[in-house]
Image (cartoon, rainbow, N blue to C red; front, side):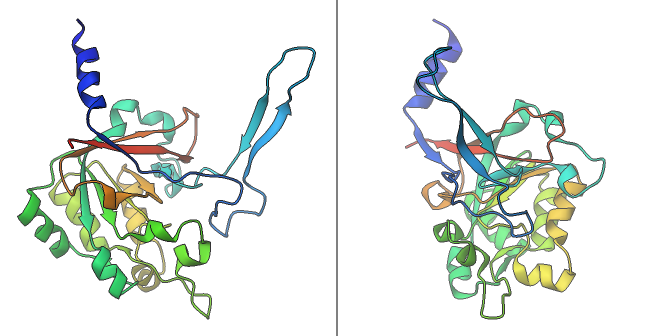
Length: 251
């Protein structure tokens, strides 16, 4: 018997958790993208055509739509796009940093390197090449765009996220491969306001890493021990693409 086939049988016995949102024509996307940029499932070739009895649909969407992967060229001119990242770059040991209780008390909370050190004291050092995901339980606001953005009466955004301190720790100290989060942006809204920019996201992409945004179900995977897999269409020149993401771990 073939070894990989036997390994797959063992994997099938494990727990599989979907980490990407289901998308449809009502799914929200960033307000800076023109209205009508997403049109899913339009019929191009319908049943009853004498040429062939089948149906063909069209899917039009922004690169940054739903649960999606950002490539360096999203923020850095001339940087790497999708084809630079092979499928070997799409599976990782998964570390989930849980700040959901802090985020529930303070929607502006930005994870710190001390939070990550506390995680490591309990679950072990973040391994080289890991995908570090930030759990805030913010995904439960999907698909309400105002709730995802934490929009207040003045139109301001209020949501938790990363700090530059924490991002630099996972990459410069622990040599992580990628990061992700449940919110629309990498940076906590308070950090973005202070910097006048999405400084955390810019740092990640400027250093050649990928990130996955708008994840879900991080509360359904263990803090350590799981493997994250991601898959995206093989489009040349793409700086961001919707991404099917899932985790596997022992029951």
